[in-house]
Image (cartoon, rainbow, N blue to C red; front, top):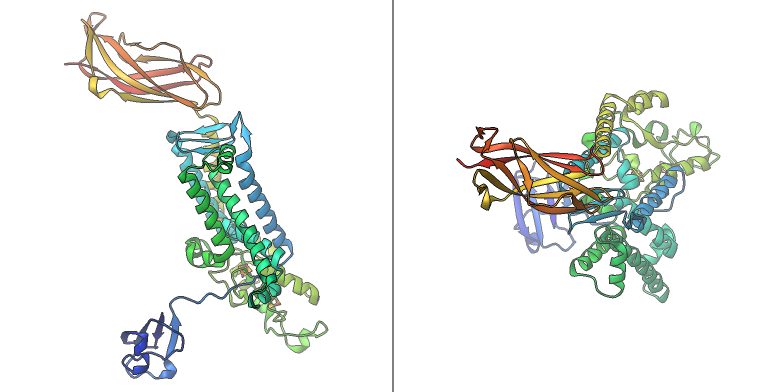
Length: 513
Ligand code: SF4
Ligand code: SF4
């Protein structure tokens, strides 16, 4: 589909492409096949004024060149670090169970010694808040650090690219192979690459599902073709997503699918560190030999070698300024530094710097002073406060949880003359890794007592138990009639082995009128 836009347009024309040559629609004649042409044409515009734009940019395949250097080292470190955690964590055992397991059917999340229940959603909120604030902080300090080093899209693209380079070679070899006609060699290279990608992708899908179903069990059932339909679906879906996104889509995900790229600019300001080409130092650019005296030749430091463009995984030229496609991976910094080194020029023609530092000529010290400015300090303070509260609250978390369910069918009845009885069901939850025994009592109404349940009650580690019990209270206590209607009471659930583990839960006891 094409859009033709004339400067000063006053009229919109939409016509099937076959009308283009007939003069029915005043749209530019283009040679590419298109089912529809949309034109915005001013009255009296000339062909010279016509500009044609495509709605969807045709993708140009990118062949990123391998690069080495300080930041490339960090990217490799983060790929290894994140993937060792991702692939390794589900295999760790803790107290006889999987250390990290999100057990959705029983609605319990296990993270090492902690078991989280639906009632613990506050910790999920804290986790999301911490993640969001960390993103704000890191982005305000140094731009798209997450995108460049730790985002799964970047990490898996790096991993798949590494496999591609090992099998098909670096940039030029891959370009040649792509352009070459099909041959046995090309087929073998392609097959090897796709089989390797497929294995990594399938293992990624299997690992992902292993966070939700015990991974040992999943592996055994997988090998004996006994996986359930949902497990099969998610292994394949996640594997397919990895294969497609890291093998084929690559920079397209960052450019067109990821919303973060679109709103990151609101988190940037003039003191945010971003990867920037220094035009004052680099321009006027131009090729030259190493021996050329650039001062005498009237040249800047950029030798127009295009290495920064060739190493860029999103295929942009950073010398045109900060662009939303830039994922902040710093490959161009390493690439350009290698060139500067070979030319005998100082490094840092492309570097992490701030808009203000570049415009006002700050030295490194002055630039870093502004990086830690009120905005980032406020983010950091709020982030630390939330982390401290969440950690403190986790450390002091009461391992006992109690949910009270009133039996609506039998709110109150007279058990024996002068004795009123209410029925309750208590869900007792032990979030600890050790078994507990607890007692239940009630208070708030004179003479109230728990009946119909054998005490103490045993609770298995990280388990819940539904207990049905009755509360009885006399109509007259100490010669005085109790108030009728619902009366506030409190259940006290106390651990036998530790007096400090206690839970007070409010409810009501009804005296019939
Ligand atoms: S790598 Fe450096 S020298 Fe080469 S074109 Fe890019 S900015 Fe210029
Ligand atoms: S411009 Fe540089 S930092 Fe940005 S994506 Fe390309 S190589 Fe990475």
